[in-house]
Image (tube, rainbow, N blue to C red; front, side, top):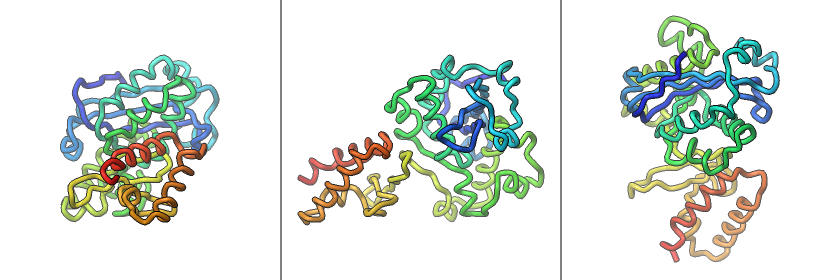
Length: 282
């Protein structure tokens, strides 16, 4: 597949194949991306172009992973490239997109892309944040479908189109199937009724600590998704006039910011949200 990257696009659908299902050790061996001018074009199946990269890994695929993707080490050596030699192309693709669409990839594909760019290419956290999270809309087609009709990609596709996916578990085939499933989801569910189940997420942090919700004042607020302040706005906690409760929140923030197990991007989101409102409530 020739890597034709359009000059102008807003939406990308992407999928990866890896050497393992374990995020910490997985190496990315294939990345496929399809490009769309807008979300409306995605919904209507109007594709601009696609590209596909194969990468030479340091190790071999685990048997379970190989059973799915069937991509041999010899094929990768003959047809692949080292990620460090072309990572800037991958970086540019994601930086230019405003909407990222995956099939169950927000917390798997993104983490592996992040890990690979860090350990093999030396890409820093701030660049990864801009690539994958900052001002990005995330659509996870699997999450949508899990709420509508919980099945695997192959079963979803067969139910919608009465046919199987040719070359299933090849990332190039999977991105086209992902885009077609999303288009069908929109087509068969009128938008007013689907809004409550279709998950279009913004600025998801790697630790899943937060979500962003737009309130009646038409402003977007950072909301805790887990922990002692689940479903509470950072803004409300910052502006709390109760001295003891405010101090408890400050202690919790300090714990997050000083916890080495919590991702840099999670800390950045929280810090920026507090900084955004602290002057307003003083």
